[in-house]
Image: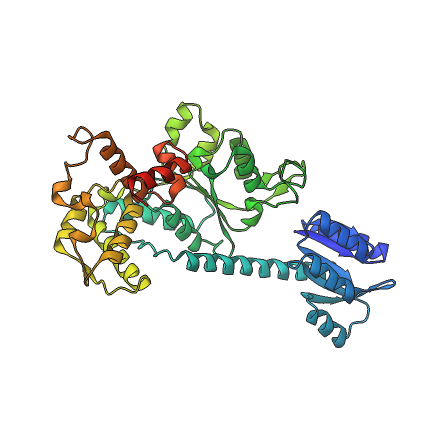
Length: 444
């Protein structure tokens, strides 16, 4: 953490700073409130130790000014007058804790540990709130398929360790959900689960998002940013679609995995982070290594525990159970009285190839629950490709126009994609072009 120490006595500033630095934190020193505010403007801090008596200044007034400048700042008050009334007043004005002078390094350590625990709880709450907002149905981590059972057994056994895990499988098979479940079963479960989507940003912005940056390190860097590695410290860092990680960033990730060290963009200071890394990809990383697009040493470092999730078409014993679970979830979420799938729908689901896997099944069930006119989902509530006669109507080589083929391909790609950006990447066009095509083809 970045710790600001505000005290008008040079000796106390110096000794407290040394103690805090030996505990592994970054220290900034200020003799008065004005200097403290200036330092906060230059770089936000996590914690501030503030003396109640700052020469001619009232520390409680300075406390209020610091919290106005940075409401998230955690302030611990120092005072030579250890009385209850001062402590109560400091707390009333927003202080986190209170330490009487003279104090020991152990007291400093205890209060910083208390701050760290509070931060982890806040991160946990934010994570749970995010999950509630997403309203994503929980994946059933059970299977009647022996191959999937073996994958899950290995995953949950590895979850109890700090081993790096690589999750392989086609898009839409539930790799990110499995990563979250591994975190939930791990010793890091009370710390943050932080996701980085590797293909979502340019190389420069992705590096900044991962490792953080200092103010002025590039255009638009108006303040210091800690980065997601720092946010995941003590928890799990999930690198989604690691196969698309730019080659220039790969050595820096390797260093983090091997040495637990990294540097922020624009800074030479070495920082340390204890993170458990889970990576996922739909690419064949061994082939990527052969083609020179992925570092061999990074591949082997990631590939400590390898889990391969099969596509939905290779899980016939699980298909209908997953579909029924989604049906029950969306019936409640959407306020519908849908209770079951018709025999015709069940047969169509078994026959269908599911190119978008579990993600496509989720989208199909959600749409069907919305359209269902009764308590049972019928074939008429599904897309045309689930109808028996649709198998050969729109296919490569069929007697259809190019426009019809394009419409069907775009529709199916949208159905099995998480969002418009992912569908555009699959189709090889930009999102704006895809949006216009959807308008033209009536797919909005």
